Amino acid sequence: TRSHAPELTAGYYNTRNRDGYLPIAQMLARHGAVFNFTCIEMRDHEQPQDAQCAPEKLVHQVALATQKAQVHLAGENALPRYDEHAHDQILKASQLSNETE
Image (tube, rainbow, N blue to C red; front, side):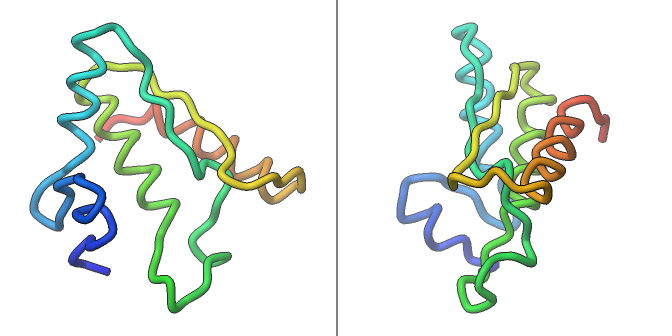
């Protein structure tokens, strides 16, 4: 939801007005680490509507944060999927780190 309650509960201060992933990316950059993020293969429309989750938007947000922090982004599957749609989504997500704002 717009309140980002699950992230806030987990300790990520990520709201409509504050990018909670940028400070994490900046900290990883300071230590020469890689930001490894999951759900790369997931698509928004494949999620249960009542869950109100948007993995594509989340991956895009993280990709922008890693660009700003100048830290490398790595991705991994959240689910054991080996179908063509998941593969295409991984390829799409891999291009996000090459985009500019």
